[in-house]
Length: 231
Image 1 (tube, rainbow, N blue to C red):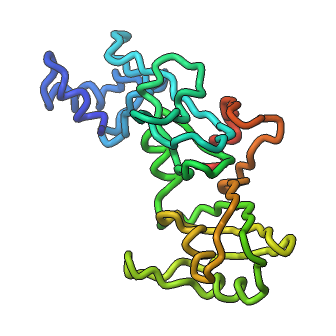
Image 2: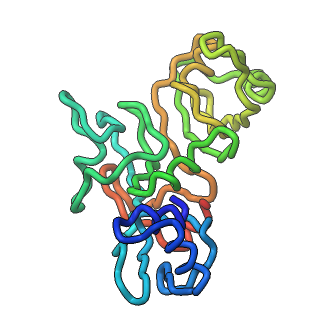
């Protein structure tokens, strides 16, 4: 919300009051004086007027989880364990997932209470690189790479996938880099060749790689540098 709107929504302030207070430099956001009414205020920001606390702000939380197989990428599920069940954190209802993985897929998952940040991680226009280790039922043939690089047409969405890079590691293993996240995309891409994916593991999102010290089901907070690198 814009800062001027935030102030004008307070019961004891009018729009005119908000403009005057801002112009006089009486409003501070996270300790810094702000005069621009268009300055964006979020639930994580501390807002003060003449030293009076208007909003305390709450800490933004960012976690990396090594998602195990047999776990739902959801905040709630009536039948299965969810990824939030793996976290020993307070106020878990505030948390949500940035970039889901299928029930039996494993690897890097981001969990946060910062909805704006997680949306940026998944915006199609951003084309954030996502790297997957893939194992398949049948051998992966060399011509797959060319087809993936050209893009595959998905009839259901009536679109062609963005170019993807395939590195063949073994007869039935490869590393695939995508720049989007369509529904069951990796499985559907290999399904184009009638080749079933038997293992799918996300290794990296953008600059952030899964911490090798995290066992399946373990998690840790992201560092400030890791959060900034993903901005």
